[in-house]
Length: 115
Length: 117
Image 1 (tube, one colour):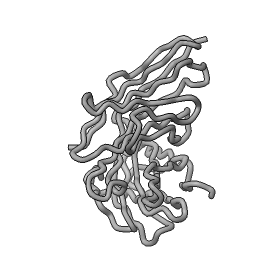
Image 2 (image 1 turned 180 degrees about the horizontal axis):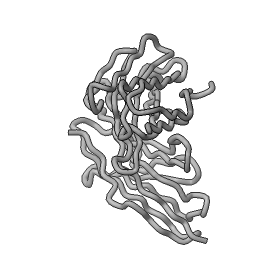
Image 3 (image 1 turned 90 degrees about the vertical axis):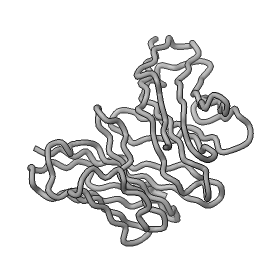
Image 4 (image 1 turned 45 degrees about the vertical axis):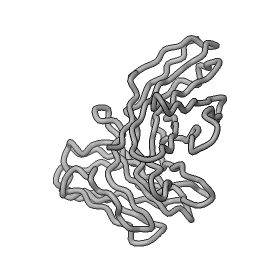
């Protein structure tokens, strides 16, 4: 398997623009997580899905952030409008509930810079 | 509330010496505990996990961790550190209550390990 795939790897955008980050989880995994990593706040859980259903979005910082998982093989995290303080590395991770496997596997991340 | 604490921002050890990176946790149910490592400009890589059974778990690259229920700790250890072990290490916990492996996965703040030659 290719692992968790995130795109784009880098994104530079101007303040006020819409940004969409994409994630393809590992095939067969049923949980998907979105995290944000910054020097100041570390690794924050934004939202997670089980079986394509959002379970906990309490980490989403503001209404400007939204996430969807229309099917088992694709998820998006959207920021509209973007602000400079949204600059961070965004990670997607997936995990499986079968076979006693519980660890999450991470993508390479999307480095977002809002100028 | 579910939480993870890594009390040290940085740990410095000499190559060949044993290393310990500390982690304590809080969950309402049984804890599923994990250690991950992150190298610069990379995603997090899974090292090892504790779900149940033997309190001492072994993982990748010679790392091991000891689950201590009474102290709610899950410290990462390695008998002999290598310079190449220098990286950012994260402890994580998932609440095993209910269906166990479908809860949120929460990470500590991370500990930078610096191994000097």
